[in-house]
Image (cartoon, rainbow, N blue to C red; front, side, top):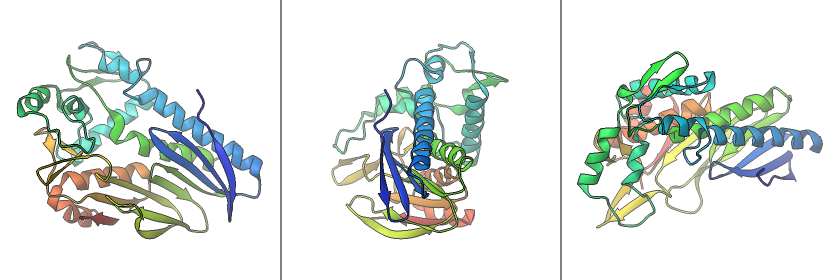
Length: 292
């Protein structure tokens, strides 16, 4: 079913809105033409729907399901899926094994619903047997997982969709554009967009950022965490232990040239725990960390 799409006039053009990837999404466009803005909105929303349909782990009719249900058999994959697997490998290598797209299987033990329900250690330990990107086998045009293993592109899919959507829209118009999927966004234009930085754990923003070209992505635990005996457990899991990373900021926002890059750096920073800001300083990017 096609998402409900709405478009309205704003002070400098048009704002189109829809929902995808369990997130509110929007396209801002500085155009004099509502018809052009509507065409761009449909293009962006269609691309978001395409990527969600193709790579969602919640469906049983896509490439992710075929891979995850393969039970040790080789599965053919197209060029786009191969590129995302290449990117997953890059993230794994850059993170020293902490960014692992096979770690989604740990969600069978962890439900970050803001409650105090922690899994038992034995359950987590048992699931670790099915985690390990280094065990994924690949050859040109195909991938194979050991039985019980799964791939989950949830950590990279939304940012990838933002970059894809902006690229397609920018190829159709010279107007200034901003694509925002659930707070991960990218812009192209001559005049800056004023972007609010969300305050983790509270209603409101912690500041504003002027964005003309490039992207912002945020990773954090403002909506997904557990709280037990005064200890807050982030949804960011260390795939080497199966338990949440501790000592890190509540949220990290990174500015970069592309949303995929910004998202990767934000997540890698959270995986550093208390060393998040040291890591980001070493990358030479603009960033914001919220610790409380």
